[in-house]
Length: 86
Length: 86
Length: 86
Image 1 (cartoon, rainbow over the protein chains, first blue to last red):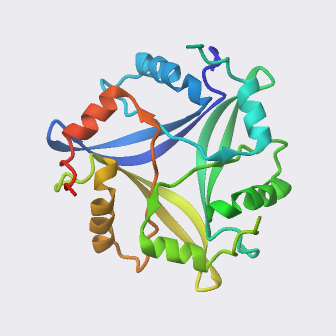
Image 2 (cartoon, chains in turn brown, red, orange):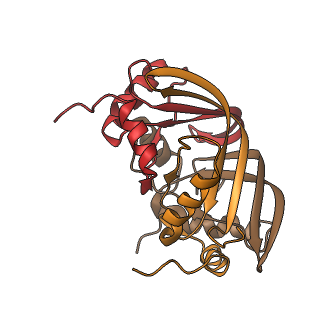
């Protein structure tokens, strides 16, 4: 947030996960975080998250949006840095 | 729902948010709502939501789907109005 | 999971739903499950889920991703079967 890579982070605890890890099934109580940003910042944001995350392999997916309310878009642009060019 | 703009609304409390607002970081306990409808109704639904929402800028995003179970699609169509033409 | 149709399942209880069913409004406390897999397995996974689900019409949507962290992608491929050909 301080680096203006995301306009907001929504954290939701209370997620029960069953996942495969190196061929075996594992269980965990996990937290999911939704980070809202511009598409052009998603790789930079993912790298920043990964550098700070306690997991060896945090599951990081980029979810596309098909549209947004105009005020949501204006807020997102106002609160994030311009994506790197090129 | 009464106006058949959405087939269902899923509300999930317990979301902890950190967000940027006018350049400063803010924290809030928030609720997220997922509204399932036809793509052609998303703008009408968003306007109806915004008219009723207590926030000055509710964050409204349109999430696309790549596909659905045929019965899910049939249910969605049966329970929502036909989108406005043109 | 045993059939390697999904790399992980995230289950989140505590969802309050209002939905239309055969023209009437209904309320329910529901659970949402996010299943992460390859796009080519989504139909097979949906059929397997539907065969085991207690609902007559479980709502099954396929959410696309615009991208993923490379390690997330490698994990997903390692932990799921190759999609059926053709």
